[in-house]
Amino acid sequence: MTNELIAGNIRNFTVSTEIFFKPNLDIYSQMIYIVLSSSTADSASLTINEVASKGRMTTKQAIKAMQALVDEHLIPHKLFRKMIGEFQDDRLSWAAKGLLTYCKEHRNITIAELLQLSDQSGENEQSIRKALVELDRNGYLEDYPELSKIAN
Image (cartoon, rainbow, N blue to C red; front, side, top):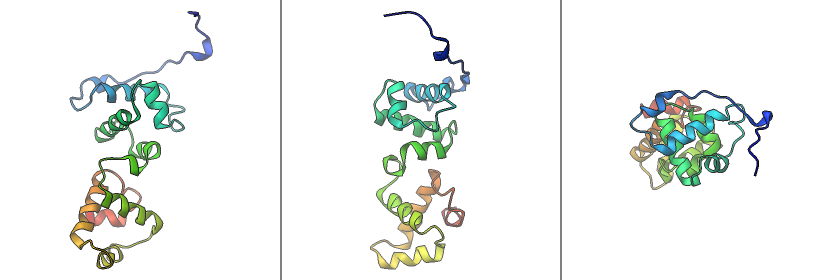
């Protein structure tokens, strides 16, 4: 084993100390924040498995840690969605995941059309509204401003 440092492998980065004073962040969230900060140039191309490996944790722990960072507004939700995908986000119910999948396939759906669909399923209007609120609360309606109106 060698102790030589190769100049190309040295990376300087700055991490805000605010992550150490946020009571809702555990050590896993802090570590994920450090991993993402240390690879800012290529963090958009990192996978959740790579981040988990660098942070010395399981993928499930890394996902939970990233959820906390999103909730604290320390990382953008779009980065989280890109790395995780909505089906690994356990903050979402299956109803919300299904509704999101439907909305992705029907990007221009209106609120009236969406609520009308409740007649074609076992869901009522209230459960669709509840799923929309859930999606909005967790940042999934950013791309659907029309639908986020119903959630508010």
